[in-house]
Length: 148
Image 1 (cartoon, helix red, strand yellow):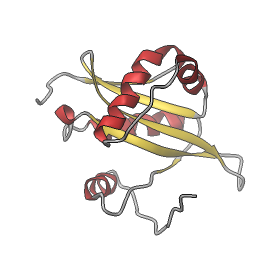
Image 2: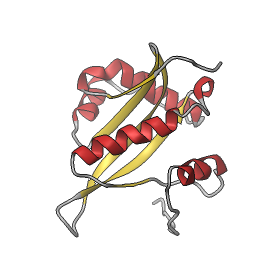
Image 3: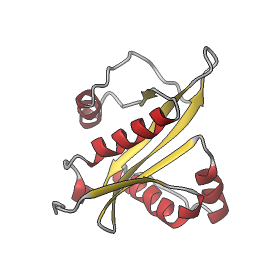
Image 4: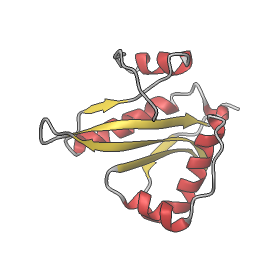
C-alpha cells in the first residue's frame, strides 16, 4: 500500500512512551524478533536519556518506521559518535525513502549536537541492508563483532 502522505519524523521523548512502545514492537515485527513487554517506567527512563535516540516516522497518523541509536562518548577526543542500532520500516511503507529520511533526521540532529560520525553494523548476509547503507554513502569497514 504506497503512501502519498508526507512523512514526518520526530525524536521521541520521555513523554512519548506509548509511541515508543509501538515503534519497538514494529522493529521487532519487521526483524521477526521475539520481544517482551517493557514497563512504562523503563521506557520513560530510556527515552529520557540524552544518549538514547528513538526517531519515529509517520505517514499521517500512522507509524511508518523508526530507528534507535546511542551516543557513544570517545576517549581519543572530547567528542562522541552515534551507533545506529536498529532501523525498520513497516512493509506497507518500504522502498519509499522513509529509511533514508530517518537516517537524515538522525544525522542532522546529531550534527546540531556536534556529533559528525555515525556507524551501523550490518550482517554480511543482509544484502538489502548493505545496499541501503552503500546508497547513503556509507563505506564498509572490515570488522568482526563478537557476542559474549
